Length: 206
Image (cartoon, rainbow, N blue to C red):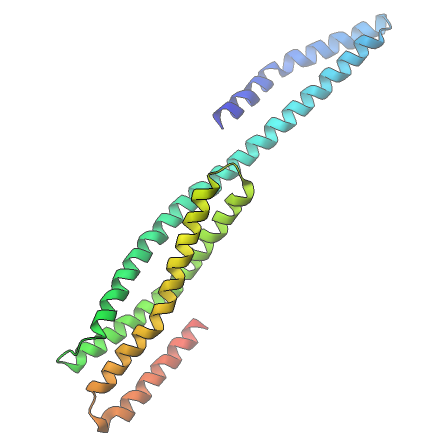
């Protein structure tokens, strides 16, 4: 990009000289008739406009790539780190769902924390969408390492899909573990409370 800016700077620097040459040539044409000179002056002006237009267009394209690339790098790094954290937390709750804690409150705490985690996942979906959108824009602009970019986008998308796939199963195991720890006379009450909680969460997502 620096080379493009340098070229545009050179074009700007030589612009007064171009105008001077064109003015001198036009004044000369008032005194003499020379089709070759007129043709050369026209060609010089057209070449200048063409070169300026190409440099400006290319510089704009590169600046757009840089803007998208900077955003992609920042957001993809943030999302990748969060996905790693989310994966570790999900593995923790998955392990907890396979054990039998001594206290019912412990099971409830795990389930409530997991439901908060589900809300966090939903909140991060906009960041995931932004990363994929920016990455695809970079692919359309070309002139970037498309193989590495495609691999990065594919990895993020697969990690996200894997996360969403595992959440319902872990949630169901934690809930079942809670039900198993509740005395039968309280089971219906606890189940109704859980259904109410889930309805509130669904309304929150909507």
